[in-house]
Length: 117
Image (cartoon, rainbow, N blue to C red; front, side, top):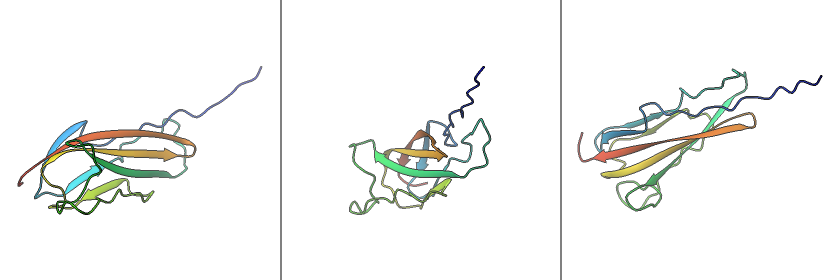
């Protein structure tokens, strides 16, 4: 009898649900610390954040319209922070790629940025 034990998939999660609203005058905090490893392996997590402007499908840019918004590729950034006054009013999709060992998963959240607070 052969027994094959495999690791279960990890589950990426972003706190706050699938959609939320924030103001241009507020810091936007995206948190993937609720991501789950059903096997509870001791190995390290890595996180890669990215953003798309849902209004026109382009990469996210800062409110000056010329600078591409950083994608927070540092593997230890379980939390991504977008400073106040960085994004213009609009609709954005933020993604996180969560990886552990040779397993990975993605999660996304839509963020509607309104003018002001």
